[in-house]
Image (cartoon, rainbow, N blue to C red):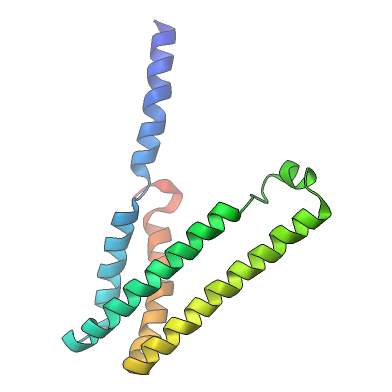
Length: 146
């Protein structure tokens, strides 16, 4: 009987922990609502902003996927210990390359946004991005919704 209870708990515990984590769709919905409120775009500005934002998100998502496929966790030092110096150096420079690609994307979409929207709206967007990160961390702190 104890074994049966233990097995049942082992299956239920991971499920309940996963249920507490926010889903990507939930986060995206929260982000859209947050940006909509903070940017206070006119209908014309919204028609310009959202397609550019969606393109930016798609490119950033693709870059993150590429990065995750090529990344070895530096948290596991045993993995690092089993690599040659050249392999470790390659991993580090690869990380620099991804950071540069991410920065290039930021610059690309900054230039797109500022060419079609007032600079104050662009500024609000970047401020809203940082505010959303803080909001999300506070909302899901420790894996629990508050």
